[in-house]
Length: 205
Image (cartoon, rainbow, N blue to C red; front, side, top):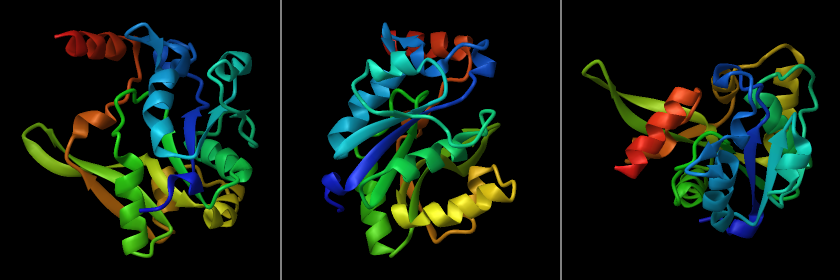
């Protein structure tokens, strides 16, 4: 396992929140606490430091006690732009990424990803889980839950500079290892107010 002091945790909260009704998704309350703060509390014990990627309401995100960095690209270019911002300001050899809208992320995320990255001599380790949709069971990759070597920044800059935007497409160009997690519910992400309310009801049962 990689020493956690060598890992910076990045919470990606740089989206517009379009499907959430044009509100800042990371600041919406889940069980009376902003979703970003849920992620921060679960991620903090796993890493040496935390940084946040946000493009609006910067002063609100700073209240969580972590440095906040905005995209270096314009016009809300997506999660890869957030990862670029994180890698650009990362001071450790590894960056562990997680989205602001997954308040139940695994407490062993860093350990599992770092073990796989080292044992496979990979540059990036990505979380996957098994999901069942319409009676079909399949492996699903969760690309924004990744452990990334700082040395991947140059490749990412080049990918973005030629118009690349999809995380999966960039990962396919890297030495990437998929890491299976048994509990797919840990990766549930909240995109709408209805999904947020449904998740709160499930947690209260």
